[in-house]
Amino acid sequence: MKVELNSLELKETIKYMILNNRKLQVNGKNPVAVSICGPAGLGKSSVVEQLSEEIKLNHIELINLAQLDELGD
Image 1 (cartoon, rainbow, N blue to C red):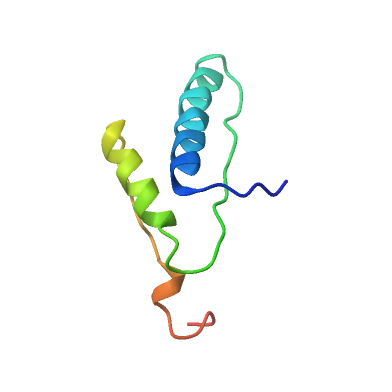
Image 2 (image 1 turned 120 degrees about the vertical axis):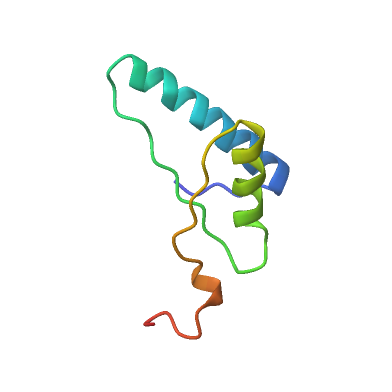
């Protein structure tokens, strides 16, 4: 499913998903994964970093594809 959101809507949606996933896990169910896609420079990473600070979660950035010269690197 593809949904287009602005940064505020993205932040609220991800926050809802995180809180809902916590409830699912408490009830022994599998959490729902989310993939955030879009062109470089939209602020996807910034939104996730801000949200993780607000709800006191650890944020680990493994790799940022926008910083690579070629996707094959």
